Length: 271
Image (tube, rainbow, N blue to C red):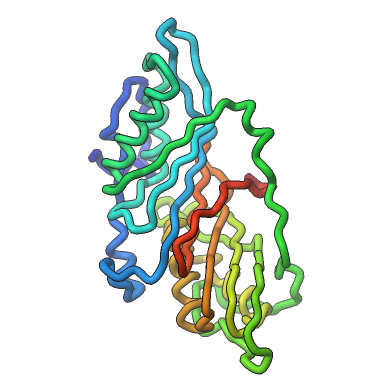
């Protein structure tokens, strides 16, 4: 794979080049969180959506599409987002016979970069009308909390065991972290679906806000949230699903769950 393009001035590449994709190993961040790569404590996927996908048909006429990519949670690598965008742009002046040919090419190249099978779905732009904007359940953002920490602190999380076991689906739109290379902000919403001792909502909101000055990739933030809630609150079951605002025509939406599950790809208003 080529050199890391993020934060570098790059020329527009108009010829197909799979070497533009830049993989980043997951294992280092897992080790930082005391997670064994061979015994991952979660399941899930990283769902990417691309809104700037185009190529030419055999007559030279442009084709545009929407793309959904699903990377498995246990793939050896994530793919750096700017390299992903540059790779997709390298298709713009290439000619392909069919949508199926492009989809097959994308699956091959992305699977090679991730080190595990990546599924790809290409849609016509008119299919956007079939995508549903998610309606949150209980949003904790209106809670009147005083915030003093802007770096993740698992000790902020608390439960009230006196209330017994509850099932809740909570959401906050106040998730913000920073890109590890450019330090630019990444904005997102996080859904927390759990069964177990009741999580203190105010403390959970403080915890979500504490990511505001944190530096990590989207996937790593979600895994940290999942691990911290599991270790501090000990739920019987847990799903953490973040929907991030797009940058460069791409949005990244990782989820981690305590059991194998396949989640949908409905969009939020900011997406």
